[in-house]
Length: 349
Image (tube, rainbow, N blue to C red):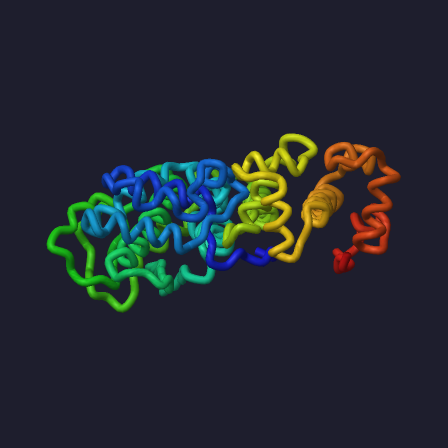
């Protein structure tokens, strides 16, 4: 993917999976409802990026109440097809499961934290091994659960591609042997699970992953990858108060021309409080609104065929002339040049 990933964050879709799994394992809500990114307006907004620390904390709370093996299965059960957005469709839409797996790995940042998770694919002619490494700063049992879950999700998506339950030849997990692992047998569909391995992995017959996908559609993979890239580029990482403000502003902007009062209401704060906090973060209401408009205008001009009049109408400008002045102020160029050429660096206000 060409868009820079948002490090230390995950998609809100993945965060929803973790919340659902925590509920399934009866984790008391009081332990996590106040975590950053789990407010309903953020959790249910696909353009919000939840801090990885929030997802990790959910995993730690869950493994404090249930074995990590059960958390892996609970997470997989909550990751129903479509729960993770366009990413879910990359594997079955590619010409082969193996190509889809590579696409999904390349677009992983649209779902998870690319700074902590890595997928490796190795081939020896007859077999293909898919290895997963998790480098998150997480408690041992929670880390085990996350790695097993990640492999389980890839297995689910591969099974959807071949339209049958795909059973790996071998499963290896970099975890101590648990007292019981019935949940993992259910997750992976096999008893051929090895523990205390150097790396967590799944091994398949090469023929299973190199055969044609029954539901593959020419050109769809490129569309899905572009959509994942654009979604990531437009998303808002939630690290602190300013991120929460920007998420509220973006949400209000999608519905209508936002006002300071409307955004303050979304944040359950007064307008003066919001203005003061913006000043503390070295910015202003007008500056934030202008930055958001610039992002939307740029995306519409470079990613769609809409005329300048329609772009102006969709981004809150009175007319095309006003929009042209804004583009000139931002980039020192015209909408037509911005649409055709390389993206110039935005001017400092």
